[in-house]
Amino acid sequence: MDDGVSLRDYQIADLAYYIRNPKWLNLSDPGTGKTPSVCVYQWWLWREHGVGSAFVMPLSLLKKNRDEILRFTDFKPDEVTIVTGLKPLSPSQQKLAQTLLEWDHSRREYELFGSQKVTFKALLDAGVCRPDMRVDKRMLVARTKLPYELANPGNTKVFLMGFDAFSTHWSALPKFVKAVQVDEIHKGYKGDSSQRTQGFYASFFSGPMEYFGGMTGTLVSGRLDSAYPAIRVIEPRYYPSYKGFYYFHSIEDPITGKLKAWRNHEKLSAIFGKHGIRRTFEMVYGKEAKVIIPEWVEMSEKQREIYNKFKDEAFLELEKFYLDGTQPGVGFIRARQIMEHPNSFPDLSKDDGSTIDIMKGARCGKEERLDIHFEDHARTGKPLIIYAALKPQQYRILEMARAYGLKADILNGDVSPTKRGEIDLAFREGRLNCIIASPAVADVGFNWQFCGDQEVDHMIFASLDFLDTTVLQAYRRAIRGKRGKPLRITVLLYEDSLDNRITFIIYQKSLDANKVDPTQPVLKLFEHNVEGEPMMEAA
Image 1 (spheres, rainbow, N blue to C red):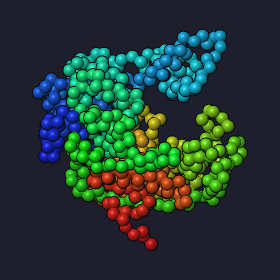
Image 2 (tube, rainbow, N blue to C red):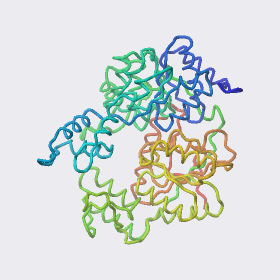
Image 3 (tube, one colour):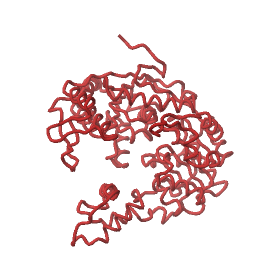
């Protein structure tokens, strides 16, 4: 334990709650200090009961949380181990890899059928298979063998693991590991039927796990049923099954049979109240100092012409191919690509991932607006964080930022966890002053309130995904404590476009979360507001 380090009064109260309850939830807001009390709880479990812990979390948090454990407890460095190793293959991926390994490729090429095409693409992305369908044996072994840290645990008392590693290898943990704490549980275990969540269940119902702690400020992540896995582990008698949960809380459209809305929020609220604790940001630091400003952007002339034709006719003929918007879901995807990155539009006439410029060199409306912001930050030297939901858009924004002389880098799914840590550190130290990030990747585990000695006072959402929780978690990367000045959150929205629908979906989801927990904010990204209160638009 570091000298002079101690828990705050409310963190001591949290620790007492964990000790009294073998299974619990900490639903406190990001930045309120959930981790230190959990670290001390792990030390108490070992010292008092000889119980080791599996500390499960997104990969980006592994190093940070290990440092926290060593800082707040008397565990020695060799007693706190990060379980490395690549993401394990799913059973279907292992089966196809084994089939391809045994196939005689010299006689004829193996023909993929049905779902094998999707499985093969996953093996290709994982580096297990090559484009000629031959298997890289070294990578296959790396993706299927037991991680070294579990095969040789040494003196380890706390194992820090990613979600997939725990769900796949929990049975290989030493017998004294009977406790699981899950940081940002909404990121890993929110879909009941997923293989990952089923492995999580098995560790309790078929395995040795007796103690459970879940940590997240956003357990209701877009849908009420995202909370079901945690509830099932805490007390399975609340609902007989996932279907029981779904039918009790859902309202389906009588014609389509699709989910229309959620109901009976009060039961979830009562369950959280009984098994969870929550510290809001306001309780710890005072009101969040933030200003949300929607900037309504006009599409460029060419962009609006393309967008309107596709919207009205659900069909668009381009130079090399045509867009068919009549297929379910496809129309929505193509419309967003026209909105967010028409200059890097996927070339549908090829299968090699190449792109074309359907704007013939003209830029889209949001890039024209970003020009103004980049020019301002280049002049003032102030740091900037930009979130964008679509990958091609992220790379175009990165090019723009660097063209203005900003020291910028990108955080998305293409960046390895190690590289993410390096970029994060460079920004916090002031060696970078601009980060372009994917909300899905950079919504947890980062503290970006300061860039060097400057407080970050501006964040831009260039495009949004459909989750209220990623918006909340994303902007709270820059609100990690009491701020010296309000954070300006700019949301770029196209007029008369799908952005209207997306912001309304986010509003509806945040309203569901608020009905379960009234301390959760309702997000109205389509209107100017200060600290969540409506405010008149400036003239």
